[in-house]
Amino acid sequence: MPQLTKQMIYESYLQLIHLNEQKADSVSQTFLHYLDEQERNQLELLPSNMSSLHVIECIGHNEPINNIGIASKMNLSKANITKITRKLTKDELINRFQLADNKKEIYFKLTAKGKRVFALHEKIHNKKKEQFYDLIGTFSNDKQIIILEFLEKMIHQLIKE
Image (cartoon, rainbow, N blue to C red):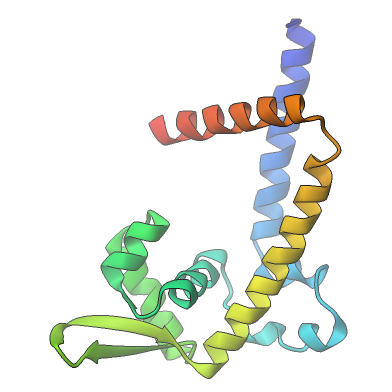
């Protein structure tokens, strides 16, 4: 592959990372594009960062779930999950509770407000997924396999770093 093509791919990769970082800075701004007017009125419900939103997603898909379960599923530290769940509890997006047969561990479930955030997040994820599938569908199956192989290698490389 010519050096110029490699350079262009690298520059596009950097641009993709920077755009993703910019868009991820604000949960509300990231989702604004995907919402109708009624849903935009619910933006104040959303946590201020993506990690908190994804903890809500993890709890919503797996409740009841404890700190260790969330940390494991999200590949984050238990300390980070503890910090996030404290904030989400304070914001009344999740509830802490203990199981009747296990008083040692704390489990989490979504509050009614948390369930609204979860549903809004799921709707946005589905819209983004549909857009992604539409884009990837413009490539032949052979090219999709190459894209998948490239992304898997990138992920593996980032994990090693």
